[in-house]
Image (tube, rainbow, N blue to C red; front, top):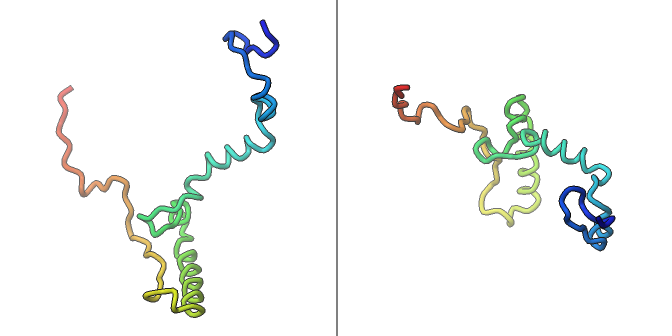
Length: 114
């Protein structure tokens, strides 16, 4: 078996590919980045259904503070350059309720005879 063969598969790895990316091991910091990305969706992804806030911001009650900061920034931008806007910009409102599947709009489930 060749020194470049993957054990148990019989496949041979190209020495050029291996050198191009430093091998198939983890790069320094890559595991940390992946773990942060896996834990982060509720903290990083902004959703239009909740006023372009993160679910965590809405859940923990910081959305109104963030909205006020956005309003201040938009006011400053409008004051500095009103010609860039067709109307005074406002941050999106935060809905009182947000549902993935609103139970009020769901049809009554059909009973199943098991």
